[in-house]
Image (cartoon, rainbow, N blue to C red; front, side, top):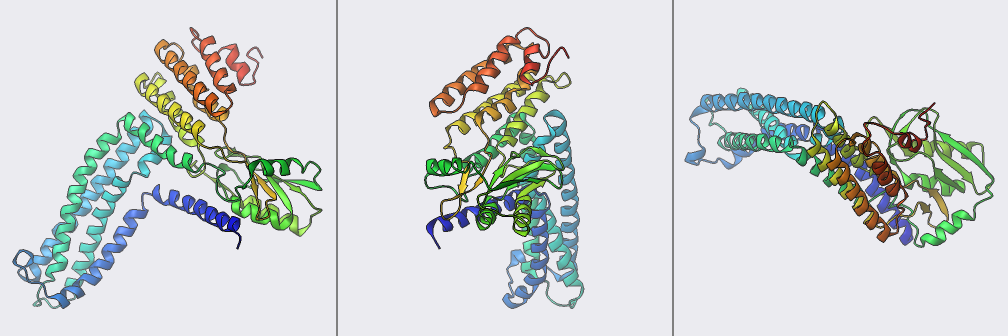
Length: 446
């Protein structure tokens, strides 16, 4: 296997693993489910170990099975009650965060490791005590109680209650807008470090790959791959597309951006044949490409660098709404938003052209650029910030700093300049101006 092929396979594995890991870490049931399974297995296995070791330490000894059973019942009832309280506190936190900040921030709460761990330890301890009670019920009542097993239940309960106390303090801290904004920024760091489409098929010589693609200006034919469903484009399996395109001697050009909402029948990509092809080969490639474009009900942070930008913009918009009226939170959000854009500008850019093992272009991705992200982050916020001179001034400062960094890194500054000019032109206005409608491609007088 060639070195490029090995790098390609490792990159493909990382991308798929990142997609699965993101789904697991934002699942509020995965860790508690694992803990309950572990509790059941421990409840079945520890009594057998107890009989083999015959531990008799005074601090860990219990007088008869009736006292042991009573203690286990108390621990089980307490842990399941606290687990219900923990879940209720979490739901209240979800509700408050959704109403005061944005529904998009719930992802940060769902992926919070301490919240998941607290619920997991409480439920795992409950299941462990329940299974241990069943084991005691079928054993000889005159037999010695399993001291080690019951001691583990006591220690697990103490750990669970201590974790619950830490969890309450943590939730109070998490509900602070600055903590939520900082968590979103931290999530953005992961997708910036491995931003789309880095990984599979990265060309050794970007200039040569771009030139090779530009030379393919006379395709043998082309075909659009349309979506069969609808949803957010959350992930593109570039490795699968490159392999299929190489086998079919074709080039696949992405036409739907990561994070965009795809409608039924909307074009996902265009296939350009470098050799005459059609029939079953064309159908197989189209099916592979369609399957490689994953659609979901919600945006994720796996390849979508625009999602944390959208989250922070939503928080700023909510803070500027008349119902909330919290300009401090809005300013905090746009400052973190500008920080992400600065980090994006400073990150090495990835080539949109992906090649196969022979260095032949097989996939042309649609990576996000600074202009798109700047418009996404500032386009709506600048309109809602009108009437607040201090916040408008801060927006201009952030854009000017971003412009300087973007210029140093060789990025386009067209959208940065446009957003700054629109802010200045809209000073004193109460709502969208004619310039805002023109920027959106609309005629204010129509």
